[in-house]
Length: 331
Image (cartoon, rainbow, N blue to C red; front, side):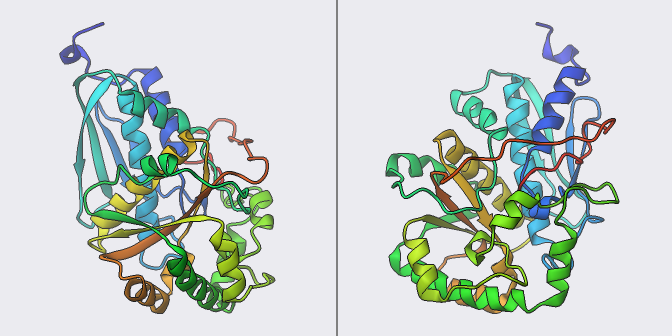
């Protein structure tokens, strides 16, 4: 193996590994709002503000959370290639999110290999979960690797009752917002005509008729809070919060989300993420107060054993540039 000081550029094989890892990160509505540049022996992840959802994500919070998930995948890929890493964050308002730089050769830990292997198996499970309890020994690793400034609450029965009320409130508001409904329809289909991506894949979207699945449509039958509480009682529900509700906090939340999601997949579990209701500021404030959260709620994650077959198919467009985010999978 050559001396690391003599390695000035990524090899073609390394570029392929890094690009594929980033392409497989989850993102809001599958817009994959990032770009990856690989100059010399650096990996630069930037936010693409030209991909935006003005109705669903007016502040860009979900877009930055998506970038944080891509960053976690990128770091794992660099580690699996046998490099130690230095990660420099850019909390300002520019496009650059983070730079990952190899700092010498170092074999990956077993936990990193497991997390990296889970990247290709991760999917959003928008259907009900199987009625099988999740052992605490499996749930522990899911919430045990959070970055600084991000916390996670596993909801208890009383917390779920509060969440059920907020879900119903938010669902009715979302269902009545014409602009948001049009935007959701625009990002739902087999392939977007502008070539950005295929948005929310229809098989998952069509099955996600209830608001705890995170996709409230015009025709969704919204259950009342008591019905939602019964549904949620059999699930493991996590709320992720950030100490600071700023760019750095949102990116860190994305890192935390992806770490937890990959740990869940590695343990044989499935998960899905909800953020729609947290863009209703009245709901968000009530959640913070009534659940006594020590920070700003960023996202909700449902975890459990999948209740049906998990979709594994994925499509790529012929001739795409490998490090451009055109390969969209269920977020």
